[in-house]
Length: 38
Length: 204
Image (cartoon, rainbow over all chains, first blue to last red; front, side):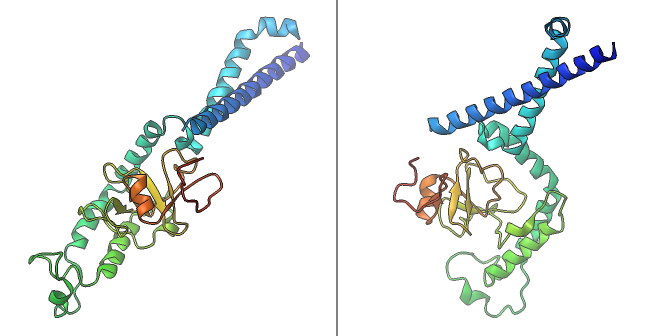
């Protein structure tokens, strides 16, 4: 049971990290495209 | 693992969104001008700055008018054209009064202040053009630009940053320019990713 809880937390952590990476990439892409469009 | 994901997908999604939101906010805060809509992102920050130094500005205004006059004698000769009768003594020492005005806001230093770049600032609220002529206004530390002035110039590097520059948000201007043409006329070069003195700095 405790392993299940740990795994759940791990899953949430991974999801959080994935969200951060996705936002960072999106931010970078938007910034670059905005700069290139000029 | 798939079982776990199936039963916790909502929480995973929330964690994903939370991570994305936090990262986005942090990135935005670090470089607001790098975003596609720099003007909107920049506006609140400038308002905040004006609120912070509001007291300093009101104190700085009277300081400029009665500039200290050690000797009233040289006043008339030094003001041939600019100032009419009421303030003949304000002109003879422009650098001195400028330094005095620089001293006034310095008393209002806050945690956010970094006055290393504040060399010889000049109040532009009096409508006079800055030291770089028409279309320029000398920057006052911790105060937003005059209306219509959006371009930041650095005298040290002789570069100017438009709102599109990735360093626009973090650049502490020494002079504001109304247009890129004004800045170029004053001898400034537009910041490019690799700064160089090219004939047509507008290109990328």
